[in-house]
Image 1 (cartoon, rainbow, N blue to C red):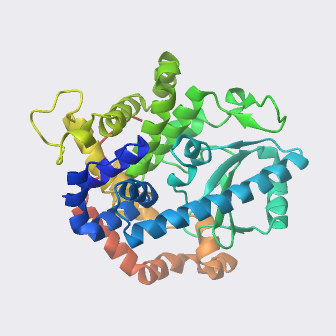
Image 2 (cartoon, rainbow, N blue to C red):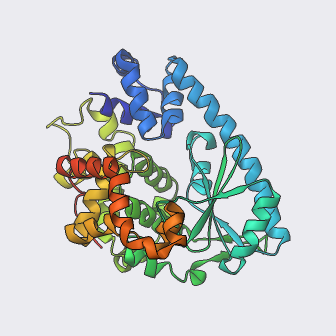
Amino acid sequence: MMMPHMIYLLACAANDMLPDEKRVRELTEDMDSLYKMASFHQVTALAACALSSAGVKDAHFMQELAVASWKDMVMSGQLEKIEKAFDEAGMWHMRLKGAILKDYYPQPYLRQMSDIDLLVDPAAEEMTDGLMESLGFERKNDPDHEFDNHGMYVKKPVSCFEIHWKLMGRNTLFKKGYQYYKNVDGKLLADDENPFVRHFSNEDFYLFMVAHEYKHYNFGGVGIRSLLDVYVYLKKFRKSLDWKYIEAEAGKLGIADFEKTNRKLAWKLFAPGGWAFSSEEGENPELPDKVRLTEEEDQMLSYILSSGTYGVKAHVAANQVRNIGLGKFVLGQIFLPMKVVKKRYPFFYRHKWMLPVLPLYHMVSSRRKISNMIRELRNKKSTPKRDA
């Protein structure tokens, strides 16, 4: 079974530990499966680092490591230019999630990212487009979704930035998260050196990291990289965090149980002497309680491992049915919101007298997608019920 091997490699790399030779020999028997699983969770660079330290120089993994290093260099350079442009325009801005977390990994490029997230002054949304365009970026939108809280800006060859004006959009299924972060100004701390830079406290950074993870977990799922983020952050700050504040705020967010289970699972999996280091299969009945996973933790891990970095469509459908009911879900697939119609079917948007025909047209043109979704709903389970 390749999954325990992958988690073991990630734990070794995250803790800057040399992998066991016997364990490495076993996992190299099926490098293709290991590579596919690591790619699914966007942790190939971290796995490559552990393999390389053990003398395994697999071509696919080493290429991923080189690309991750190059991409981090390019994106970091673009980030500096963007932040400088925001400073000169008098816009406050704040780095989010991976842009901060990567510096807590053994090397920044080991925390792979598809994009970099920034929160900026919501009053400067219109200005943002012009500034990003002046730096060579093009704004992209997903025709299937209407995001009211951020814009996606891309620039060849690899730069991609999500500029947020709000931390969570109103369209999320995570309604408590939207309400909690609707007005976040009171939680932003000024920078000592740059008047336009904002920060979270360590506690609020952790809370947003977990709340963001929960949002994805409760929608299409979230991968093992998110658990790694939690472990890496706890490894650095666990002893200094105000846990009474965190637990109280997690309760307001409706994620108290999720936060606690998620935190314990991350620590059990990756801490030295933990699950990853104690048993090849992770199911040894002789394992001490501090290492052995509870039934709840095991269910969470299984769901996470089946989700990949950004979740899967089967989980999206199943979770939406669970949250809003089958009837509303089906109607939502047939009768599209006008914002979606405008982007996906501009002809019908311009000729609104044709709108009564659109549901039938949409069902015919999307029949393959709809049939796949029905099949996935039959075969997949929704996320284990968690809070909110």
